[in-house]
Image (tube, rainbow, N blue to C red; front, side):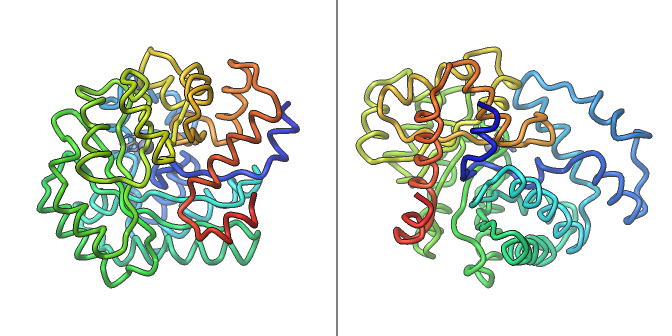
Length: 324
Ligand code: HPA
Ligand code: ZN
C-alpha cells in the first residue's frame, strides 16, 4: 500500500508554510540571521515538541518563526516544502501563509510574499509541481488588523488565490471577520476558514461559515458531523473539507481517521492534508498511510480522496480535468 500511496498523484490543500519549518532549516536560518536558538541540535528541538491542544501547538509554532526575517528565508522555507512535496508526488498544493505572524515582528509583507512567490515559480520550473498561495488572517488579532493586512495584499492580488482564517479559535468566531471576508470576496479572493476540531462552538462556527461568510471551503470542519443540517449543506454545496488526521491526533484525544470514513460514507468532499508537517512529523503521504492503515482503505478509496482534493482545488475546470 505504501508504494501505491507513493505513486498516487496528490493534491494538498491545507498546509501552513510556517508549519513546514524543519529544525535543520531553523538552525541554518538562525545562523544566517545571527540568532541564538535555545537548543543545540535539531534533535533537541524535536524532543521539545509537546502538543496536546491547538493552543500548546501554536505557542511553539509562533516562537519557531522568529528565524524568518528576509525574502531569501521565505524562499528557502517554501522551496524546502515544495521539494519534499514533489518527492511525494504532490502535483498541486495550496499553501497558507500567515503574514501577520511576520509583519507583527517588523518583517515587511513584501519580503514574505515575494520569497514565497519566487519559490513557487522556481519549483514549477524545476519539478513541475504547481502551487498557489492563500493568505490567512490570525483570528486572535483584531478585525481591523486583518482588514489592514487585506489592503496591504492588494498590490499582490495576482499572486494570491484566496484568504483563510487560522490561529486560536476560542472567542474568535467567523462573524468577527465578516466585513473583511466580504471585502476579500469583492476583490476576487476565494474564501476558506479554519473550523478546528473540538474548539468551543465549532458547529456554530461552521454554520457561520456557511450562512454568513459564504465560504468556498472549510479547513478541518470535522465537527460538522455532529449536526445533520450542516452535513447536508456541505454535501449539497460540494464544499471541500480539508481534514488533517495526524494533526488532529496531536491536538485532540478524539477521533482521527474514523471521521474520514464517516465523511466518505456521507458523500462529503473530504480531503487529506498535513497542516504543519514539520511539527506533526507527517507530510501528506504519511497522513494518507495513517488513514489507510486505520480504516483499511482500498486503493480505489485512496484514489477517491485525491480526486476529491483536485475537485476541491481552486483551479479552473480545465486545469483540474487535466489532473483527474
Ligand atoms: N489551526 C489553527 N491555526 C493554525 C493551524 C491550525 O491547524 N496551523 C497553523 N496555524
Ligand atoms: Zn491548519
